[in-house]
Length: 109
Length: 121
Image (cartoon, rainbow over all chains, first blue to last red; front, side, top):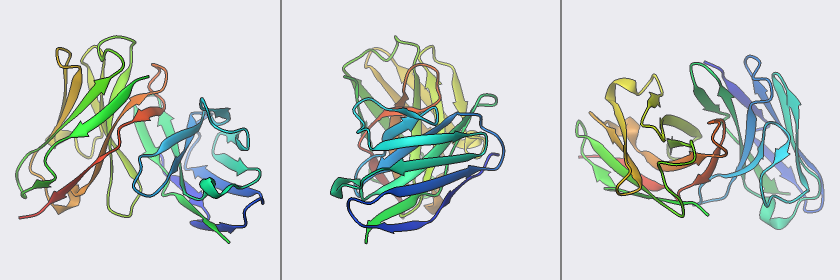
């Protein structure tokens, strides 16, 4: 099973600053990686897929990069509504498996 | 656009079968070559993919749940369902249904709002 490890577990950043979140896969997932944002009491929402493609309607301040085993989600200038938990998720073709990282909580500094 | 809504009992007794339904609106569940998944989130924890059913009816389950799991499709009602047998406290979680993004099965979008399930006597 491919294990996804996110770091840090908690990230404290001030509004207007840049946030960088990391996700590492235990083996290569090519670019089959997504990022989700989850706010309290809500379902996760797709932010980035295929490692670097923004989902429809997602602001340009969200960007993703990486391939293979190392991935990064960057939020260029944090807005108040961006403070949430972020999960990465990989997809493996066969057998089809989906695994999520344990999440990074982005909190206001 | 497509919207998903989970429904089912919020409380299930240990050793019983958990049954949940995901109602789909804004599109037909039997068209578009999509994968329809169940995902759960244990209290205060991360996300676990449970399994999917393809629009054609074929399924694939998380190996850790395979022996207890059935996912089915009801095209007449435009919904799909989950049955998880012999539940224990470890199955207490918020259960989400989701569709894949674009028919390739890689990513989840949209999601339902989630339904909490507690396993307790």
